[in-house]
Image (cartoon, rainbow, N blue to C red; front, side, top):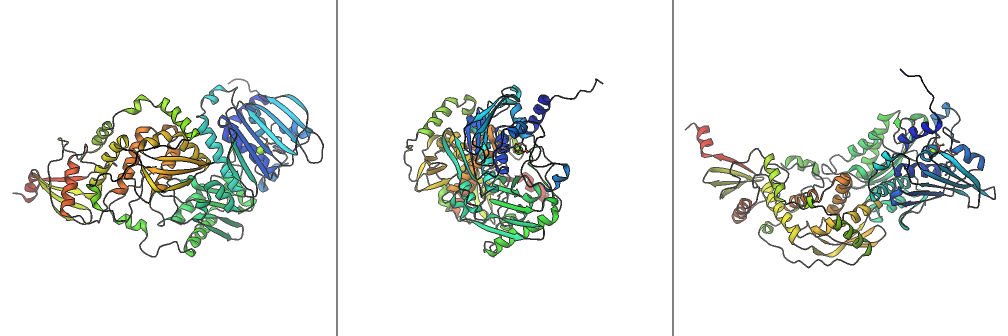
Length: 613
Ligand code: ADP
Ligand code: MG
């Protein structure tokens, strides 16, 4: 082995930066947390190119004197703890003294700061970790840290960054979580001179939730409060009428710190079990106050995780608090819960992205034969920002993505082991409906059992996929207002072309609010908002890997699922015959869009063998 060296400070900082500073959002988190620790009442974050070229965080906190400013840039320099024994009662967000030197090591940083009791402030310029200059400066009390050209001296890290809109969206997500964690502080996020987020800092959690998710969502949420010996729980939880397709709308805050806490997440989900359809997640902000000695905050380099020392007790308290709140607000239905109904019906497709739970609503089977009623030429409202994005995306649309959809069908066939060699479904005559969801039919080759829901899904799925390319969107009688969060708004803008291609008609209303004026033909009525938000969640989850083809495919299959006849629905003889005819005309009659079989065949030979004739 080689001789042991002690690393110099610069190298040590670069290594620490590798852990603490993953991307612009981590810089925003560390700087905003420093502002919170400095007692700020207002924090303004400014981003250029998603934070890749410039991040500025300004606060009106306690500021630093020049002497401390120089120290703050040194590794392990902190005003927050003095010795290891303080670790057991940390009540600040920072304590490691690593953030400033780590960020400074991989960027060009400047800090301007002034305490309230001195007249002149100071300004330090640091490049790749070395102090370039420090001078007096005129500035208001508080601190402004500006971080330029992040990772300019670590090209590999710089290369692994995503697009500026994705990085910006991640920064926005951090700001939203901090705003939820600290409702008494006002947060403002400015991107390209536009204010994209603002929380008023009233100290009211519901005001912070309204800033993040929109006032409409707050109205669908319930306050929770509980006190146990060492724990206080406070928060807002959604009624079952409000749900999302991913966990990303559950925020857990422990002692004012936004954290990942799997135990608390699971407890929240457990509280909603049987209240939400499978695969749906609630919108929750859960704020726990726990005595610092019952917590270990020193388990993650970016302090994103904490360990609960009395986990079981906390979990039990969360479940009972959330459950009680839902019960007291009469949101737990007295009839059979939806989830049970679903177990009984044979439909269980929970894992599909933006799959929508089949509802108990009755859908007129005449839809099968009815063609589009009214459709109005899509005329998009002029909107500079969206138009710019449209043009940009249009130029980028990749050739590979314009491949024919029939290829998709072929892939489906491979999955279907039950398919016959001959891919066409023969002409069938319906004999009877066999409850809850089967149609018995006969053909030259014997007996066929068809799953009415799956078969109808297949028919609609293929129709919808074709329709996206050919049919314009349909205007809604009343536009749906979408109050999005910053990230959703960025995603919508980024994917506007694909959305419009399928028939969505979207207008920017101001800030992060959009109007959904039109939807693809035969979009499930009454579910516009829910399904649209599911689509945004889907894009959020898939990130850059979402392709146009996959999006069209998912949209068609979730619309098909919503519109298809349900299990248990009674069908007339002509309806059954129409269904069979239309199924025979599909490209892949033997599987539903999720890859499950639509038809089971018992040939005369099978029957004879079974009857031993
Ligand atoms: P930590 O937050 O773990 O103490 P940092 O490297 O993030 O470490 O910051 C080092 C020190 O610089 C802090 O302990 C604090 O004293 C000072 N500091 C950093 N940011 C600010 C700010 N916005 N306002 C006042 N002081 C600050
Ligand atoms: Mg810090």
